[in-house]
View 1 (tube, rainbow, N blue to C red):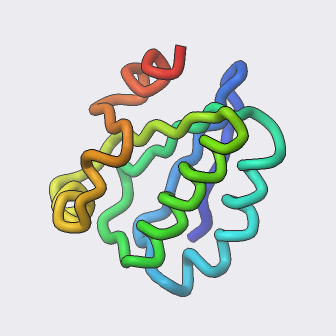
View 2: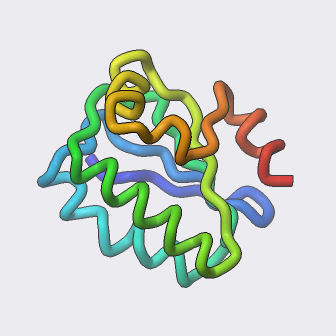
Length: 111
């Protein structure tokens, strides 16, 4: 399943799939990377339905964050379920990303 995107004002909302594994990320990566150069430079990533994130999923989210920062953009994540939050924690990524509990908090964080 691919990521679904919606534009809300000046922000792109990306709803990630249930699994961010290598095969899924390879299929989505070109589109996700294009968001760094096209359209809104504020991105909210919804991980509320994501149950598993492989290292390739972490890598693509990290790269998007870095690419957007270079373009004066911002990424905020929200909705991390406990298993996904644990993966981010073990990878040391909780301190790298802006993480909010809800969509409204994430959108507010971008203002």
